[in-house]
Amino acid sequence: MDHSFDIVIVGAGGGGLFAALEAIRTNPLATVAVVSKVYPTRSHTSAAQGGVNAALANKDKDDSVELHVFDTVKGSDYLADQDAVDYLCGQAPLVVRELENLGAPFSRFADGTIAQRPFGGTVKDRCCYCADKTGHTILHTLFEQCLRQGVKFFNEFFLLSLEHDDGQCQGVVAMNMRNSSIEAFSAKSVILATGGHAKMYWNRSSNAAGNTGDGQAAALRAGIALKDMEFIQFHPTGLRKSGLLVTEGARGEGGYLLNRHGQRFMSRYAPQKMELGPRDLVARSMETEILEGNAFTSDAGSYLELDLRHLGAEAIKKKLPQIRELCMHFEGIDPIEEPIPVRPTAHYSMGGIDAGMAQTAVRGIYAIGECACVSVHGANRLGGNSLLDILVFGKRAGQEAALEAPQRKARPVSPAAVRKAADEIKSYASHERYERYGTIREEMGRTMADKAGIYRTEAKLRSGVEEIKTLRERFRHIRLFDTGTVYNTNLFQILELKNMLDLALCVTATALERQESRGSHYRNDFPVRDDQSWHKHSLCTLQENGDIRLGTGPVTMGKYSLEARSY
Ligand SMILES: Cc1cc2nc3c(=O)[nH]c(=O)nc-3n(C[C@H](O)[C@H](O)[C@H](O)COP(=O)(O)OP(=O)(O)OC[C@H]3O[C@@H](n4cnc5c(N)ncnc54)[C@H](O)[C@@H]3O)c2cc1C
Image (cartoon, rainbow, N blue to C red; front, side, top):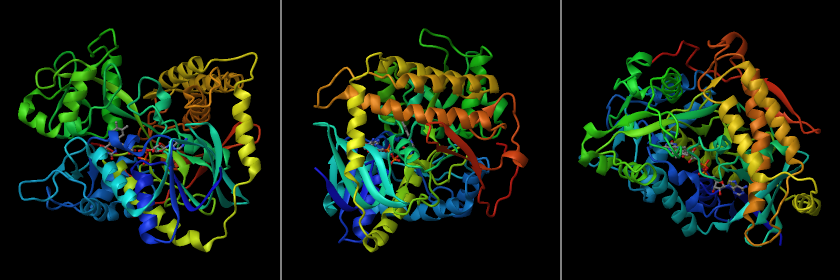
């Protein structure tokens, strides 16, 4: 069955839903559909705990948009495009108030204003939150509003390819996961909002299982460049065993990080900001403590402690209820009684689809949220700025698409594109000499964690690139053992693995190329930031033969010139 809409949004996280809502509100006559591989409220946005940044000045009366811009640019290690950051921070108070009006129940101060908590790498306390369930609340609010406005949902549809004709958007090809039928979604505009790709780091990731970068890989294969792929954020506090996240809000509320000698070791690395240094710095400091033997050891690996006990039972129950639950379920400890065992975990992809202010190089195709690189996070994202990014640029893309799409001629997706996708899927079941999904998936995850983790070197990255290339070769023989057509999870996993392998090559290759340390990308062999040679974005495109080509692009500067970054 084929479909046709003015606007198709792929992804039903906070970014996709705000884009859909805004598109239909901007142009009620436009037909808007959302295609999502998971039921919307299961999107990873729902896992966001800590909050969303906006200079409302409810806590620190002298906060301003200007200070928010400065914190973001400095946090990005000066790699963010400052025009995009100006827009992000300028829109922040508006979108947070808009969400409140749409029904999101933000936590409040005693005077009734939206409460704000400290978050890492900022000079003022500006993170707005709904206890420690901010993303969940935002996602449900937006979903309700989309249903109310009549957005059409195609839930459990898997994006297979992005189609355009001579630089003009045609739409997408997707698979109905319930019966494996391959369907064309023709659209005058497509907004990609498929979330991040940090799940490629196997069991050292805070991400949902579905954060496999499907939209990024589809864009790459459609000839659109990926930008700044070497920058993967490691969050300091993942739970020891699962890598599940303990929000930065736990340190924002006053939690301490301790090594096995009982020392608050951050005093050595960020004497002023301590536990509230930016994420790249805190994660690196923790990794150093682990490497220097100052960590606790256990069967589940080395770890440090996040101590919340001094905050008291009442504050923990009121402000961090979900964290307490996660600790009880996944570590068997109650943070009211015991410190939480933590270690850094792959968390966020700063890089993604090259999209200046949400628009890609192909007319009518937009990319927003974590799958995109707009770029507002540069080399390191500040906590609380990603929920903001998805809202601000989701809204912008929805508005632009709604105004632009009706003026454009529809160019339907070709039947050949549908056939090509179907043939490829069929081929997976017919490989004689075969490879198994599980083996390649595990090897890829281990390579990424070992070779492209927090500390990187030329030797590690070189072998990382080679290993990923070998895995891509082996993937050619991947075997689909389950040939059923009803909710074939074996097939979904294979499709996701193919996408992750392409992106893993982009991450390792760009990390090898960038001979400097900036933000989350730390090279032991080039430990200093090198603005002369490397103050630029990296770009990856796919060649006909399946290799990737590397390039660079300029950083848009603004009010803030390059400065040393210290905390
Ligand atoms: C545990 C955790 C906590 C976080 N906490 C915070 C926080 O406190 N503050 C903050 O600012 N940021 C936080 N972040 C980051 C932030 O939550 C994410 O960057 C953001 O929510 C991503 O939103 P999104 O709309 O881009 O994508 P997502 O919410 O990840 O949604 C992706 C959507 O794409 C769809 N999709 C993916 N692939 C396909 C496909 N092949 N076909 C069809 N559909 C597809 C999925 O079904 C899903 O609907 C956190 C992240 C994590 C992992």
